[in-house]
Length: 221
Ligand SMILES: NC(=O)c1ccc[n+]([C@@H]2O[C@H](COP(=O)([O-])OP(=O)(O)OC[C@H]3O[C@@H](n4cnc5c(N)ncnc54)[C@H](OP(=O)(O)O)[C@@H]3O)[C@@H](O)[C@H]2O)c1
Image (cartoon, rainbow, N blue to C red; front, side, top):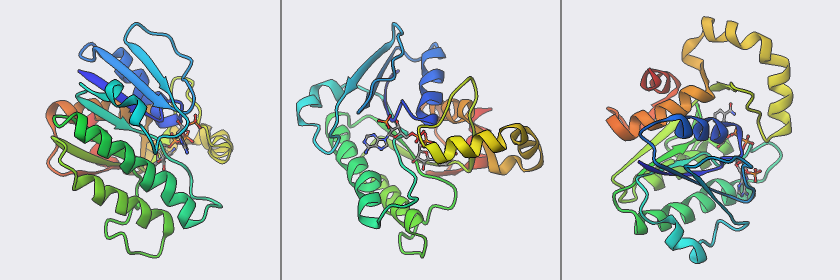
């Protein structure tokens, strides 16, 4: 399997990258983002590009892939709807439209989040923007597209978030997360489970296109 990862420097993306590099069925991994991951591996190549709204110069580098794991995203805290839409919807759709044109057999996996508003009309700004993005992705002619809606993600294997507020939150909650996971397993997953579930859904599919936290954990096995 040949895999593209967007957002591989982030908390979710680092977890997904780790599982892809460890998986014997993944032959090639290419990360794309405005920074390199800094990792070295025989399967890994990286494209560093500051403006993902325009991928014209890189289209050939994005051709011939089986799956895209799209982990790029930002917290909406302090952002206007216009700015949040630019990163969440506009960048994602610019990438996805290029990929589907070049890779009609591709499976696309998008990370949205628990509470995403599938109607795209609700009161919560982040939830409706993510919901609109999910709907637009599901309308593209990929071989398959899956929307991942994790709730609380516990970072494992030394992985840290790029977002300072999340880093602070994890520092406080860190020691409590195994307890939280035991008490409310439907609301907690891990970076490892998210990565394993992405690989599983490409291989085996799932019974629905929108996968909530418990579906992700079940897929991860
Ligand atoms: N963390 C959680 O518990 C959680 C739970 C549910 C859903 N999610 C969702 O999962 C996704 C990833 O979250 P995360 O926790 O991994 O976040 P993170 O650690 O802050 O990482 C964000 C990633 O997105 C990239 N990125 C952000 N803005 C960008 C831009 N304008 N252009 C290019 N790249 C950009 C970052 O690249 P740089 O290295 O260049 O900054 C980084 O790779 C988000 O959509 C988030 O809503 C997270």
